[in-house]
Image (tube, rainbow over all chains, first blue to last red; front, side, top):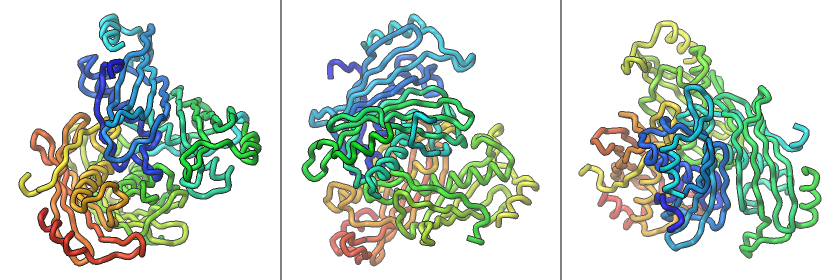
Length: 133
Length: 133
Length: 133
Length: 133
């Protein structure tokens, strides 16, 4: 997983699977969110999700192999693009047996919740993001 | 919504929103799924979700405007592409005040759960899908 | 349902069911919550869930018959006890075919989120609650 | 936690909290379920949740203190009653700082999914359950 410098492990629970007995398609976006919030809190030095000055503009997932209850999934993440006001994150979900489970992407926009406007990514955030490219 | 020939209405419930008080990003994929299952059950004349011979290959959502608890959202859907073994669905989520809330896309592959292989879309399914292009 | 003066209808969606193909046990508490928030918003004349000055002290559900995707469930509700600072709600979930699906109970405490203390139920709220006993 | 011989740790994720920024009331039943499935799979020596020959008859939770995103919760569990065809599990949710977050109870009935009838708890299961009283 050298291409994904930030990662977390998630165990698939019963509520994550659906009547096909595999992880439901929408749940991968919650896995991405869990990784993203940990990453951003770490990067920005904040604690709660509500202190992260971002809005999500887009999310995408390609499903490669079903995952099952009890599996430990590693969600790897990297910064795949840094723009003026927005940046992209790329995700890879890999099972303990090495199987590629899913790949995805989200687009985040730097946002000022007080003025309700998107803002330019501060230089120090840009520098830290580049450490995870 | 003339471009989206199939649609359902969904009321945003408390559990759909997150600590930002708007609909959580992953929940839109559940809204898409709810519309897709109704559409496919109708199209194929089956009842349960587990009788629908499809696997999901990809899902994508662009978030245009936040939605809030109590809002009635109309999820419109159309067939945007029909290939040999797969087809695409396009989604539009519109609030009662006309606000565009989200747009999305999913890619489905026709699948035989007995042989565990993808299969060619049967001609009669292809014809019915084309009614929703 | 004459014993349950307030009720809402909920359609079981695919995400509500689990790998046993019936509604997951935890989801009934979300059904109760959906009914409870509508009821309290109506009773108190407020709009958002975050304006409802209550905390939940207890929730209970007895499962009588499984419910399946696509079923329309009626969640009936009544006020079963009014105390000094708290009151009880009783719930009944009935399927369209008349089948009793579940019964439940929640205990709410009137709460002042500014002072972080429980408070006595105001007389006018007590009167309105008694209309739903 | 000496009174709860079986336990698992769960980290509160963003999707578990609601617009009050604390863990949603229904989510505790998913925490209980996660602990219960691990316990039963261990006790019965089976792997998947669908191999566990039980139906849930009742679930209850008393909310003692709110829990927040990022907290590590320990869900302790013990067998609190063993009847002829059913048994009770008691749960305790404790935060890392020692705070009691929630207590709960579920009632399970031994069930034969082939004949669709409840059955007497086999003697060897009864013996193993008694190890966790």
